[in-house]
Amino acid sequence: MGKKLSGKDLIKLGFPQNNAINIALGQIQRYRKRDKKEAILADARQVLLSPEQFLGDGIWGKVAEGLVRPVEVRLQQLRTSRVAFSIFGENEIDEQAKRQLYDALKLPVAVSGALMPDAHSGYGLPIGGVLATDNAVIPYGVGVDIGCRMSLSVFDLPASYLKGKRFQLTNMLLEQTCFGMYETHKNRADHEIFSRKEFQEIPILKNLLGKAWKQLGTSGGGNHFVEFGIVNLNNPRPEWKLPAGEYVALLSHSGSRGLGANIAKHYTYLAAKQCPLPRSVQHLAWLDLDTHDGQEYWMAMNLAGDYASACHDDIHRRIAKALGKRPAFKVENHHNFAWKQLIDGKECIVHRKGATPAAKGELGIIPGSMTAPGYIVVGKGNESSLQSASHGAGRLLSRAACKASFTPGQVQKLLKDTDVELVGGSVDEAPMAYKDIRKVIALQSELVDILGTFTPKIVRMDR
Image 1 (cartoon, rainbow, N blue to C red):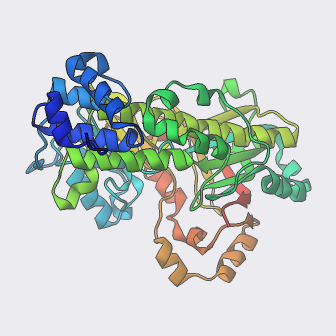
Image 2 (image 1 turned 30 degrees about the vertical axis):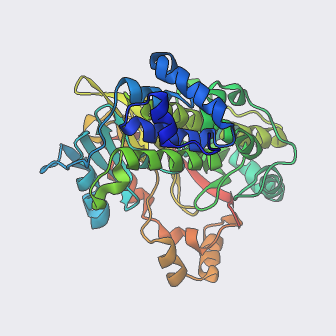
Image 3 (image 1 turned 180 degrees about the vertical axis):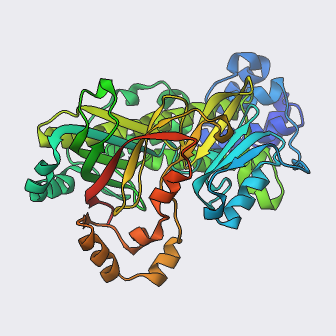
């Protein structure tokens, strides 16, 4: 018996000569390549004899599925016409972003779609794109940074507190936050999320557990930030237990770090293999939720979303402790995720890639740039937007265009003029790169009501 397991070994074992062999070899190469050949064949024999018993298994579940209900892989054809859609703020959105939505609306699994006024082009779905599908999840419809979210803590401290403690608050951000690929906290916290069964039952997650623990409470690069600012509550809710007025607040924006990025990469690859599409829409490959990989991605995506939430909890816990003050209330929401939602009475999968959930009564925070206000909002449950709103102001210029158009001196002048202190950051994230948030908010008056604003004052970003 040769050392390396081959398809012939599986055929000798009794595997049917179809795609089940390729699936088995792929899973063995991915998860069992260091094991002895005899041990692998012994396990494979058990799967062949009783595949139903292995459905859902992290390693052999996909192989068992291929034996019980083989799936034919074939090139998917787009519809000749689009499903229903709505665009909000059409004149503010570039043509490429619209074309990306139009392409997505022709997918055979598409049910309906929408484009938010902050939209701009991306990979797969445009940023600011919302797409409902029938029992299918598109990894690139969720995005690479799964569960990227906003989190706002409002403290019962007057706005004047920030002016008097500016130096201390700046140091607090420097000492209590970490950014980029390599910075981690010296005193690492634990969290109940690390005891979740998904980390033990899904092989790719098992391998990412250590990295996820190291990165807990950290933020990524790009447009991710942690900042102190002033919240102006002009329409406070009773449960907040704060009257109308101005208060010190902390706002953070980041996602699921390396955990989410690796999940996205892994399942995007699997989706592309199982769902070949024309080249123009290849980033929109989907996973059927009735398949092993579809179910596994759904569990991994939800875990990544909960991990992103745990990271924000840790950031806000550290800073609240340093501040010596508990938040009076918090507002938070995902904006790179997929949810199960009823559309015309049917359960669909609604992807929001850079869009805020805005069901009736649902709270959210929509940030501007570092020199423009963000908005605390409550959803109106507008069905034409698939109960969604924008996730920010939206980019007007690409990162490359920013570098070609602006100098650090120009950025610093604008920061000084608006009384904003920036720690880290780069020209890539120049405030001038973004659309006018006030106009973006005005274009979605049908989608959300405004409860208050957040004005940044001390901003910490990756260097």
